[in-house]
Length: 102
Image 1 (tube, rainbow, N blue to C red):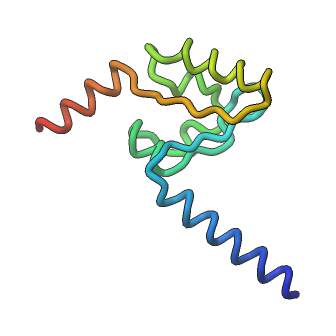
Image 2: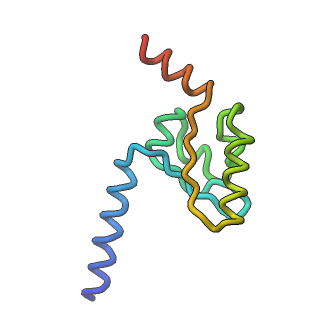
């Protein structure tokens, strides 16, 4: 029982961390389909998690960043490394600027 409680506490801590993380978190399957996106991802791209879950990451990545994103992911599969990929596309940067000046 104690182990069950410890696991529940760790899970709650993890959920709290992910939900309040400012970095964008995306979990993909082996075909690069979205399994999970963090609330920060949803806020940044103006999407709902349910709308992108199950879709290929290339469909939810800004058009001008698709090739770069896919190449980074393919490299990570080969090296078995975590992908830390800064996605600041021209499209997204323009949107951020527009929101800031509004």
